[in-house]
Length: 99
Image (cartoon, rainbow, N blue to C red; front, side, top):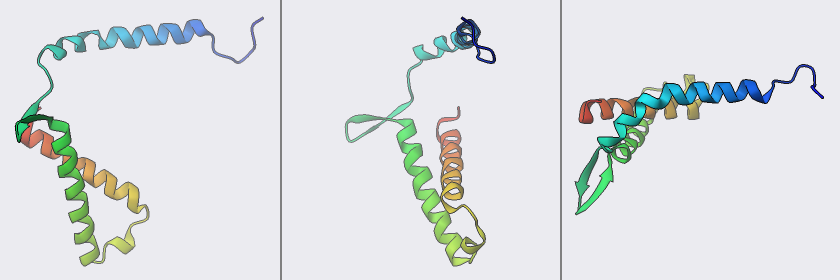
């Protein structure tokens, strides 16, 4: 029995197959390995460093916004500062690792 207005599993199966075929060329990137850097004898992933840079950057931007009295003008504080931290982390990734 087919229910009206409900997507069939055949449609979603084709969608997932299409997405998998689009991602097939990305498999070749895995041979390079993840960028990492040595710290105290252990290798840390590069994204962890960029996460730290983004968090510190967001905290400093919040401090600057509080000093300049811009913080009161913002509506969604959490989303704004998370977005700023993400942007700073991605800029750090671009500057440090170049890809």
